[in-house]
Image 1: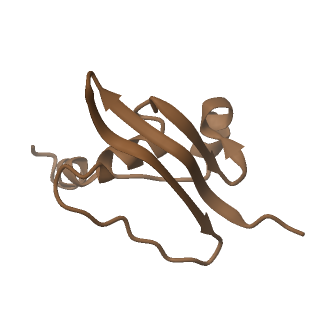
Image 2: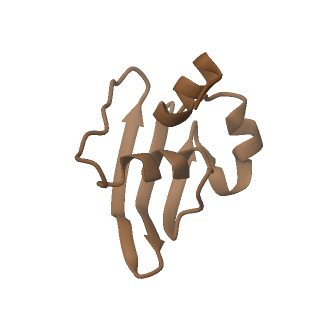
Length: 97
């Protein structure tokens, strides 16, 4: 059976000092699914995406994209994904902060 998992995290956590901002989340997104990450400011949405894109290292847990672990295969993964955070999108489009 073919594995059509696009993104998978297992027990993903991130701490900054004593503050836990992402607390053991697990998720699996299959090819063709549409998924939204919703929550109030400070809920850990951007932190989670920054870990998926390897901009931040998780405190614990694993991330796989297209069956490849971000801890081992990020250079291969970067050729297949793109990410523009909201804060930088305006800067890149206008040239102004």
